[in-house]
Length: 280
Image (cartoon, rainbow, N blue to C red; front, top):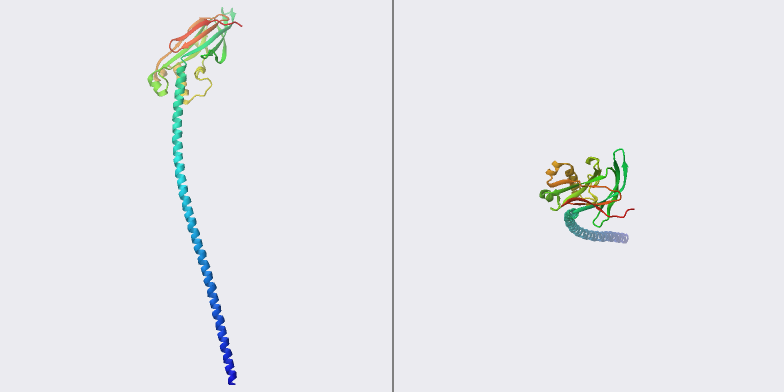
């Protein structure tokens, strides 16, 4: 009986020891795996923090570069704005110089008047004269299309207009001091009133001799607008500082088949003279 009791006690101790070993092993294993998981999480967190730090550094570098690029762009925009201003100023100066040179260059205007036909008009006791007017350049080439008119009478007048500017208008309008604007105003006969004649240079527009079909700058538009105002309004001429504004209308008898040379100089006025030609 005693031996049985001892055996049972021994078995009990063995079971208890085994259970304790199992429990301790389980606790130790759990602690190991827990520590391992902890270290893994810690390592992952440290890696994540390093990556965040690297990203923040990269973003900071990118922001620095963006700020530098922005400063460069702003500097370039200022340079472009300054360049545009310079270009605009230079363009305005070039336009003024070009205009002054073109206006100054036209010191005379030349045209031809050809008498195409003359038909008697018994009722009025005169003739109907058919004439052709064409302006010429310095090389004798036509400027624009010839214009034809039928006028009553055999003595024709060519009305011209000359305007010379004072210094104060020259300074504000960039016109050379020696520039004078001249135009062929109209054509009429001894049987007509001047206002009944035919316009030669279109009223309100730049004559072809001063620029042809090329576009006009705002400055030139103002000059020609003022010019035509001057030609019809003496009070306005005084306001604009015109030192000389006068018209001339020399005449010449017409003869069928004749060609007349009309020359208008700003310095000495208008002249008309016959010149030889080959009749067709």
